[in-house]
Amino acid sequence: MPFFPRLLLPCCPLLAGVLMGHIQPIGLLWALLFIALVLLPTRLPQELWSALVIIASVLLAAHLLQGFAPWVITQPQRISADAAPYLLRLSWDKLLVGCTLLAWWLGLPPRPRPRPAFVVPIFIVTLLAVPGLALLLGVVAWQPKWPELLGAWLAVNLVVAVLAEELLFRGLLQARLVSWLGMWPGILVTALLFGAVHIPFSPSFAMVAAVAGLGYGLVMQVSGRLSLAIALHGLVNLAHFTLLSYPLRIV
Image (cartoon, rainbow, N blue to C red; front, top):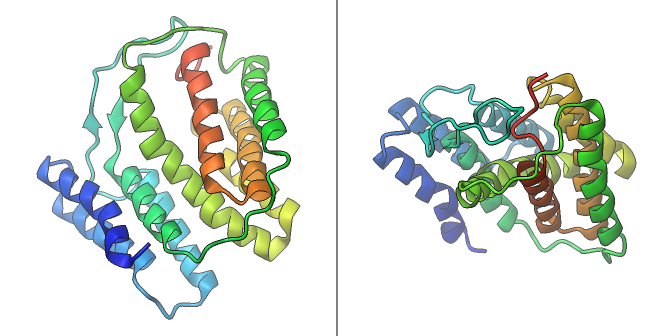
């Protein structure tokens, strides 16, 4: 895809956030620096560029840089009887990460796509193993539901959380680690790092996230398609939201 159409991917939500008053001048500065780092031509060594993009992406996605106020879409409401009230909000900094990395990904040369012979088994095993482990560890309980905010939640979760996490962990980090360490070490280290960033929720939930990350990484590696990793991640999150305690069970 040509450069300027790709540039619209991060710039349009950035403009929306500024106009709505959710992105302050310092946040706009961080955003423009991040977009420039990711999308503009650079003479930096590939390893250094990758490290800088990963660090900047984590800082933004973890809301560690000032200047971004979330857009609160719904007031806190209890979705599951055994979980804390849930607040649906859109995080502009994490949305920026996903849109900018998507613009970068769409500008890469076409990649060879292995035959996805094992995609369906990986989907099935992941969709069974991740909720099963979460139930076994007690971080969630069986709580089938169909909340009214499902549509809004699905849009925000896919466009913000899933897109940013898959582009960062599978599109960028796993690709680099596989090239440096080999296929299995690269996938495993990426999955462990994916689990590690979920430790603030709980160590048990981080274990579940690591297993999920292994499934997403395998799908990406055997198919060569980031879109399938995004689809699997979205399905796992949807199963969590509609079938299990959400966000997490209160022990």
